[in-house]
Length: 344
Ligand code: ATP
Ligand code: MG
Ligand code: FE
Image (cartoon, rainbow, N blue to C red; front, side):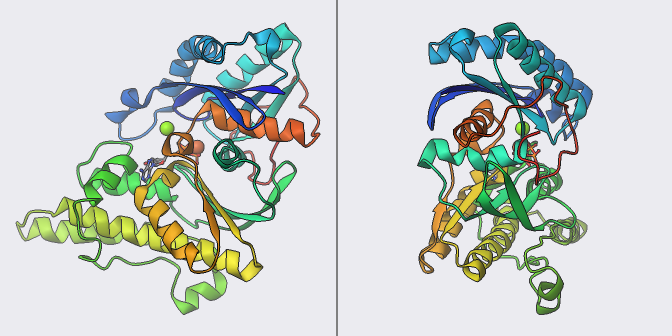
């Protein structure tokens, strides 16, 4: 079946088209530059940008795939979680197109879509798998038994998301928003062993209660203190070394907890998704560490890790193949859609 996916949960307007696991189109319009001077996404600005971009992005995707709306078998749309006003634009558009073209519509979970997108790169996901979901607003470890019907959370961040930590640290280093890409770039020229930043929730006493949980706010504070001390002393801040050492701490914690979950449950597949999965060090470290346990790491190409329409289409395609019933036409935009609800 031919599935069209619409994504508008944050600052990217995305429309993707897939046939089975094959990506046919992935059109994207981003309002990221409009938010950059505020150092974060401004909800009202994002909603307005989605409204302007949704129809042209839809048209671009159909043209890119060489199909018409009549050829589409089902429309999938991000129902949540995300910014309420931003979600509403995509959900309203999906309903309009579905009603006009008499197509079934699936309201799907953005986070499950971050996991499902890997099928476009590596084919069907072996289940059970462990998923490490690391994005701008979320950081979770999930047990994926049946992606079409639900995921089981094993742990999550107790404070900041991994992407949020990248964004905040970038800001205090004077790097642009979003912070992940510039930190990734700076870190390549830095020494990751130069500063010993803390690894949150990895001490024996924390592991007892927080085996698969994450904490990044202490790390962010440690980086801030370190940078402030340098500035107070009138010394230059070695941006590349700080970036590399910070990134190393994040990747160390993420990969060690994800692989520990795989080993404890006897699971041989680790899939990594979400914007932070685009991080070059995270990808390399996960693969390198997994190898010695015989665990296979699946991470889609960076462009599919950050928000896009293809991921929504990929999850829609998976739901259709699994025989999941479509949503009602009055499906909600739910800014707080729980991680365990894969489709509404
Ligand atoms: P969520 O998926 O939780 O709703 P979101 O959709 O805003 O949040 P994504 O687009 O999935 O988030 O990811 C954006 C985040 O990924 C940002 O915090 C950004 O800094 C981070 N990111 C992007 N590229 C990289 C990279 N190369 N290294 C580290 N972080 C990155
Ligand atoms: Mg974004
Ligand atoms: Fe996302």
